Image (tube, rainbow, N blue to C red; front, side, top):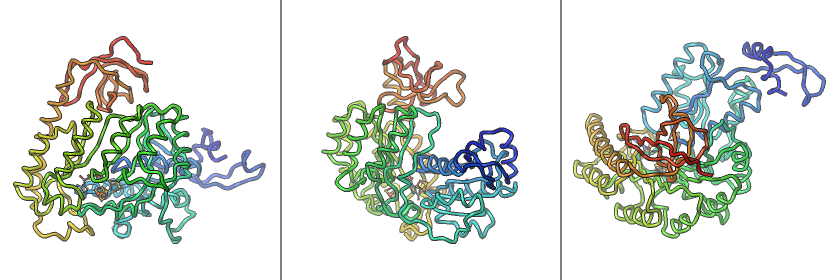
Length: 462
Ligand code: SAH
Ligand code: SF4
Ligand code: F3S
């Protein structure tokens, strides 16, 4: 009934000012009900798990009759799904929250930073309300003024009963587990997201079917350490095999893999799943044994490279990406150079690269031998140059070939151009308009910066 009210343009104007007395619809029978509605702007920072969480929050908002708007100017309230992984992510969210509060909006800071810096944000006057990643269910009540944050939060939330609100995209992500038990010494995620918990298959299947029924063709199964998925006897590899059999699922991926947990047997079974994207994101972080130990990553460089060998053998066309972190406390110039060497030797197709950011409460924050920030930045800049060179070289190697491309979105600034993916998930820019979800044969004609440009051939792939 609430959605029926929000759909009416006469009522929408009334909704915006907050209070509405209306005639009840079908659900409530013929009686008068008093409803408080507001328009809300949802802003998401951080990793893919936060992006996936935003679809759960959208579902909660929609079910409560709260309208999501695409402009802050239309909203009375702003909900931020925040990230604390680096200081920069916190600073951005803090700045946005402050601006919104200055404009008189109600501000809820939810997610990782809400959990870790909540009280601070309220004391600073940056947020009206704060809550962690396990407390999203309270957002509608908080917006509508029915919850005062006095009740204890659910500590092992999985949201497995919620059907994620989908937009019109052909690609979607679904968290199959939450939390992390790894406690890498630099990382705040286990403190922000709590302990690992996996969602049972029967719940995931309902969510997956719901997403697929809406026309999504590509799904990523997510977890901070997704290879650790375990529910009863079911491990990630079993989950991938079962999910791949769902009708309508054409492309299947998973993120993020911890290199320590990747096994030979798993890779062999993965190679037999036809829908599985030939894409591995395997965060290396550092190529120095000493630094890896200090980070508590649980693998050596030799083990990492051996696993890359297994992956390349099973998936010769693999699109391989990684995360690299430089300037960790105690990282010497030699340690750093080992990472530079590894980047060239391993030949990642792409890397997410970061300068170490000190996170209060983590083990590394107490380590001596912190590097000066300008030195961390210098190393990062050098690493980026090195990786860009490798990224470009690997992309150049594909120019001139013909590939199948899967169209995923309009290109952000490209008149008529589209974003598309190769069979192994590598992104390309298609120099032509095309339907979302369409599969085309295309020729990779050149590079723009480090991006590959593709021209469609006449054929559409069935
Ligand atoms: N679960 C994933 C990573 C999640 S965080 C994994 O284990 O790989 C994403 C990336 O942020 C990390 O891989 C790391 O490279 C980076 N990161 C995490 N904490 C950081 C910190 N304190 N400073 C800088 N980068 C950090
Ligand atoms: Fe952080 Fe390590 Fe967990 Fe990844 S595996 S989220 S880096 S603690
Ligand atoms: Fe950031 Fe939380 Fe993801 S800290 S990286 S949003 S799990």
